[in-house]
Length: 213
Length: 213
Image (tube, rainbow over all chains, first blue to last red; front, side, top):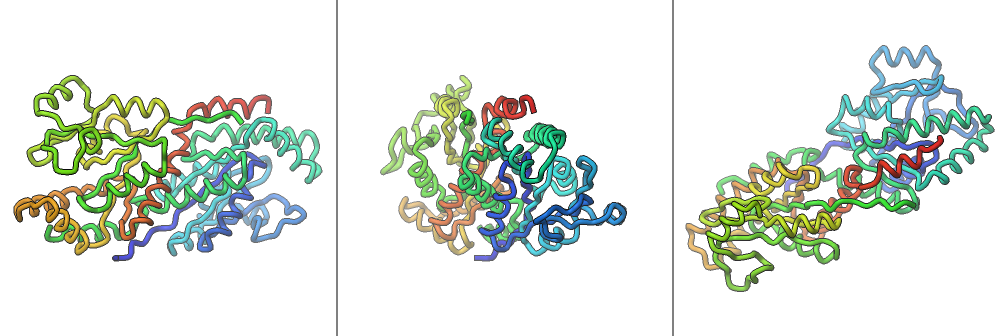
């Protein structure tokens, strides 16, 4: 059989804080050796336990601004007082090699990616299983980071804001059970990989099939 | 967790004759007990081994015409000298019960379904692995049915015609290995079942999540 290649796809996972997005991303990376994740650039301060170049590229405001001005960001947005952005070069390299790239970004980044790369984009929104569970996870997380009540309220309001954009996504996974949620995320990836428009060289293959019939 | 229901989807499988579509349909029906298949109505003569109401509903030209005139067909088309059509009632019943329905139809039927039910439709085109294999399968099939060389040529020309429409489909499966092809067909089904727009009651669920945040 003639080999049908395909382009890499951009696999966006968005969710309110604490819905399991990071766990799902890591599982996908573990199960798909050829997949990479896009590491965002941010102006926010590095937190204990975070690693530069792994969790984020931590940069100064001026450097961030330069990257935007030089067209080095695929998308960027301001959240609270900090800027976040996706560096263009590593993404384009992976896609051109046929590798899929995970994006752990919010609705603002997703909207911007959709404008420039709708055909390569697959978007998944992760929801927590219930209101109670969501609040529990948001409060737990804030305990780890010693946030004030005002910061917790801010985080909740951001979660509500994020959730309101679920309807702009291709798929929704309700994360009731993390193993099942990972399974679904993998399933979506596998199916999207065999969409017709992602197969490169299909028209030549079909021309060969029809020859002389 | 609040139960998120979904609408049934219309799963179209098209292919040139002998590409494995029937085997794949049967496997899907076997693996998905809730799934049904749409049995087409045709004016062509019943063949040895075929069962009325299972392979097709075999009817007279006048009855077929009446069904079309009474709006009882979801789609219909003429192939060679025979008419083929999809009766509306069983499909609508299954979908309203949340059951998925398989359609083993050609590009003409698929185009008509797309016009009336784009949101519920998932379309898959099955291709044989090579030109040689396609011809072999077409000739083998004709041996079973004792076709003349003219009939074989007609079948080949119909295959070429069918294949030319592959680019109107959502997914393409190249059937090199039947087990792998069945696996892919199932994968597509599972992923499409969790598309956001197929989940009924999601907006109420999300409203509940955001309440008071």
